[in-house]
Image 1 (tube, rainbow, N blue to C red):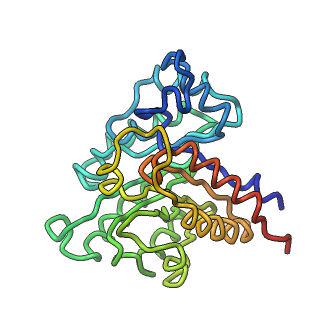
Image 2 (spheres, rainbow, N blue to C red):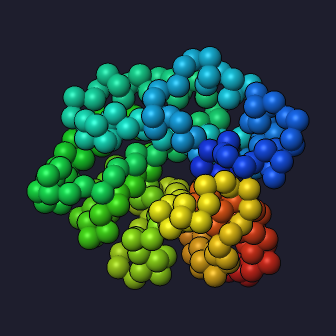
Amino acid sequence: MNQTAQLRIGISAFTASGWEGSFYPEAMRPAEYLSHYARHFDTVEVDSTFYRTPAVSTVNGWYTKTPPSFVFALKVPQVITHERCLLDCGAAFDEFIGRAGLLNEKLGPLLIQFPYFNKNAFATQSDFLARLSTFLKRLPKALNFALEIRNRNWLDARFTDLLREHTVALALIDQAWMPRPSQWFERLDPITANFAYIRLLGDRKGIEEKTTRWDKVIIDRSRELREWVDYTQQIIRRGVPVYIYVNNHFAGHAPATVRLFQDLYQTTQLPSP
């Protein structure tokens, strides 16, 4: 198996403060950013769809500015996951799915990202799982979905079994208050679909105390990247392709983090079985 072909890695957005001159040429117009991005990376996680369903013209623009092999991962809008918490959201969800479908063969996983839920939102994990189960039953079977929760104590077999039942990928995230990769795999099998979805998010609060301009790496996260490289290769050796998306908050400059991950991946390839 060609392991590299089973890996797609990109960034959690294709624009950021400080990328002008550090990633995008100084004189480049914003309308050209996505095409430039797509010459360097083969996938992107679109953060803007979290805030609103994109216009038809926007989605069509994404499609025409990228090569045939490019893949978009889109966040499900927050009105569904945060504001309505999966209740009475059918119309909003259907509108989003219809708009996402305009990407055709370039549409990759759709990320259902939940916040940390306190007891005012759900008194127990069972309450959350009951509502989630109802929602997952209506997901279009032809599309790939990943799902992220930030309640680490809810990461158990009941939760992963529910995702596995509906072939939804558990999003594995690198974040200050979530488990390290080894802990994910020690506690349970976190691979719940026919693909894996990894998000390298970092410590937003901690790094924003140092900078809010994302033009250079300011934290050495090479040790953590090596850990993720190791687990990515283990997942791929199971025949499961992996999508990875890097946030600027992980180390300070996501394009450099992606390049470092790719270098580490290439130089630590596992032998074929």
